[in-house]
Every structure is written in structure tokens, then in C-alpha cells.
Image (cartoon, rainbow, N blue to C red; front, side):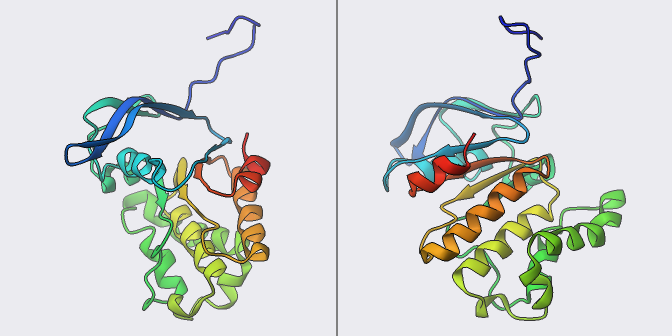
Amino acid sequence: MLNCVGRLEVMPLLEVHDVVSGYGSTDVLHGVSISVEQDEIVTIIGPNGAGKSTLFKTIMGYLIPRSGKTIFSGKEVTRLKPNEKVVEGIAYVPQLDNTFPSLTIRENLEMGAYLRTGSEAEHISRDLENVFRHFPVLKSRQKQAAGTLSGGEQQMLAMGRALMSNPKTILMDEPSLGLAPILGNEVFAKIEELKSTDVGILLVEQNARKAFQVAD
């Protein structure tokens, strides 16, 4: 398909159309639409309570919208369960409590691949090495319990675990929350690096300055 200036129009990887969603009888999202293309970082900013995390929970299937729909890779996935959306290629990095603290770093990463079977399972070792390439600190400490990591290291572990599901799109909810500025900068540098792996990223962030620096 060509647009009006003659360029090839790329269909979005993730599309959210007019979604109304919330909790109980209370609507938090009032007709939200957004799209993310491959190799693109799209950022959502806003204060606490604006509905950013609610949007992610709705996209992932933890909440079923009252109206509207979600399209992924050309397929409607609105009512799929969270694990089914992971299989489709959507990964989610929550803002807090996003690792298994009693498991080792390596075990956390392997948990990210638990839905991969058949021929996909054959590539798990390769993808584990790819995660270690992006996050060298995880490789050198892979037998260490995740709960002993710093906040920034735990965020990197959560991002690495998301990559182990072999996603096409990653939803990241407040990756710099609670981090010292230097650690936050390191996390944002890794987010930019992940963009080069053919993954689309939808990012929720309160640090507007940093968010605008990485967003397309």
C-alpha cells in the first residue's frame, strides 16, 4: 500500500483501536487508540492514575475491554489470555516485582522461554547467549539469586527474560521506576539497544525527558 507521498506504507505490528477498559464498573480508558511498528519505540507518558498500566494490562489480556479491539500482526487478539498473547509474540515487563527473587538469574531467563516448544525450543540456548550479549552483567553472575541484584540489574533481568520468549513487541512499564539516575540511564541505553533487534517497544514512563530521548 502506498501513501499520498508515494512511500510504501508499513502496517503497524501492534494496533489498539478505541479501547474502553477499567475495573468493575469504573472506566479508566475512554477510547484509547495507539499503534507500534517493528523497530519502533513508542512512549506513553502521564501522571500516576492516568491509565498507563491499565492500558498494558488490557493489551496483555489481564483485563478484557468493554469495547474496542487489539490487533497484532494483522490478527485480532483482544480476548486472548496473557499466555496466548506471549505465544503470539507480545512480551510484558511489569514495573515492580518483575523477577523471581529465589531463582537464579539463569533460571529466571529460562522461565521466559517456558512456552517455547518444538523447533522453537531448539533455539533457547542460542537466545540465552544473545541475552548475555546484551546484558553481560547477567552472564557473569548467572548462578546468583535474582533477589540479590540491584534495582537496575533486576530491570535488565526482566528485560532479558522478556527477550527469551522471542517477542515481536515488548511492553515496558516504568523501567526507570525507583532507580538512581545513573542506573536509569543505563536501562534506557539498553532499551535503545533492543530496538536494533527488530523488536517494537511500547514504553510507559514518567521520566518524560528520557522517554522523549529514546522514542520515535
